[in-house]
Length: 349
Image 1 (cartoon, rainbow, N blue to C red):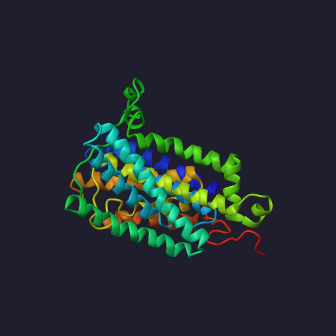
Image 2: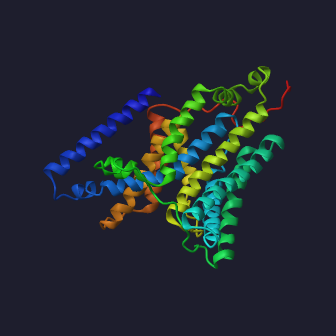
Image 3: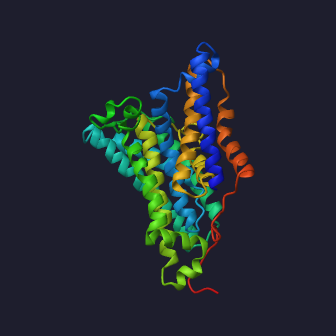
């Protein structure tokens, strides 16, 4: 996979160099107008949009590397996004706006974790098909959240509720370009910037990470070594619920609303999260890079529309999947854990 990373880095360098040339020598061209949208606000928006995608991807990595394929990430994002807004709105009459928003955040993570627990019971203990159970999680959330939104607010769009305010780092936030992007951001952005390297470290350099990888590759060997495969898989699936819960809360509590119409405000970000960790070959850093790329494309589509460019939103949404297919076909392939999707019973032959 090193070749893929080198090619992607070279492509990024060439793209930046080309943008600088166009901006310098052809300032009045339509291409220069497009490049002009790549300002601080654009990068801030890209990082915000990355949050739900990347957290879903991190959660999917832990679950699948332990041997449990969790394609219900979209449902976990939906249920956490709804719960965060519902609890934030309910508690706003009992506490300060900041406290209400954080109560919503904690409730969102708890709701996602509980739904992940239900998924774990069904797939690990009851040995249900993991793909079908994951689809069920998604469909349950997709049906429940808009219904509950209509019950609470009389519409599939909620009222405005208290949001998570940006954390500003004094001094560092004044640094040109970098400061406003990284040091004047939503709390969930900071959490993501910590979660990515921490997840990489845990998977590579801790006993738990080794257990997770062994559970997904050779659960019998892990069981023989005296480690409970069932507990490792439960912990991994619950961790996927926690991470997806942070992503869903970050999505809705940065906006202060839950939109339940259509595919809900989550709008496929959980599925893109799955694409991101496959693109990154189950590496948290690679998954973050892919998530940022997909988020940047989404933010660019919105910016271009403000400039009067007519671009199909459906076409933009297809780009992440097309990129993954092309890169994996031409550069390398993703290696799925050997025991992913397989049930395991301790002591079985």
